[in-house]
Image (cartoon, rainbow, N blue to C red; front, side):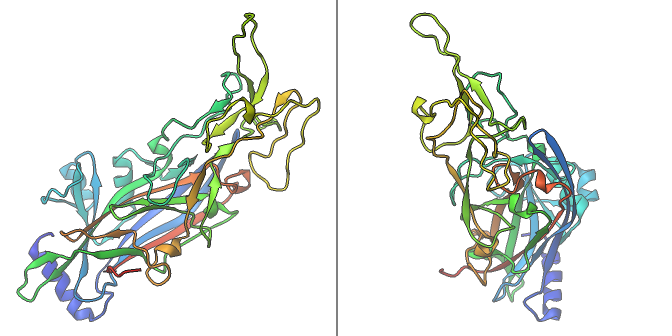
Length: 383
């Protein structure tokens, strides 16, 4: 729980404040978003992003400290530079835990992210979670490049996303209480929520393409911060990655009984589908191009080239997303984490661009976004 003298100082400050806003902490993060849509590289320079942690717990519990779990140890020089303190309690989970000041600056946050091999320059790129439902583990996968010459009509996104393409960190909340006899103990079953002040802002629907995923021992979910309703997106289908106006296609050679090679052309099925695809998943080739559906502007609004069998009978898997208000105390009342018997709550946070989202297009060029994340702590109540 930290040195008693530090906690006593916090207690004295809390007494002076005489308010539930007794202790607060903040993280400052600046994001730069790089979006790869088709063959185009679109760059976005984001506003400063504030991630703030504040205690609004009822009773005598206080948010004592905020910390981070990392897999590689941090040197003494860096600990001093970034105002981090090594933990000696060996909290379960592996790696190393370091506690920070209640006010964490941008340089410290960027150091934590890059120390673990994630985006050192605070850049995020379009990748995908593939299929997802609330409570699932959040795994991120790379988006493929055009592969018409690879001779396969089904391309699953099986390669894990490069850690440098997104932002991630493991954060710990320490909720405790100082008793009248000045002993310190952790407070179990204290919930961590997003505060109502949490907000994202951006241009050209970039916040709809953005994703914030969180995982804790209590639950996990993916949030689309630019949307006010929960929903889902398809994470499988056709794409025009080479931007030639046609859905990508390829041959899928099969050795026939007479020794000939079947060079039929098929539209490539990218991503995740509900059922395994069979030959019946593709329709018959037409003698003329099938025009694109331009009712929505998206990277997969291509035409079907004449002579190519179209992908017509394939049901894509879906990735659920929620709205951030679901995890705010005064609206959805669903915690993102709950403290354990030691008063510790740990949350893994990942931030990326979802490449399958309809908003993740070249229309994002010159877009900017900023975010303010705040968390509050209070005793867990039944929903």
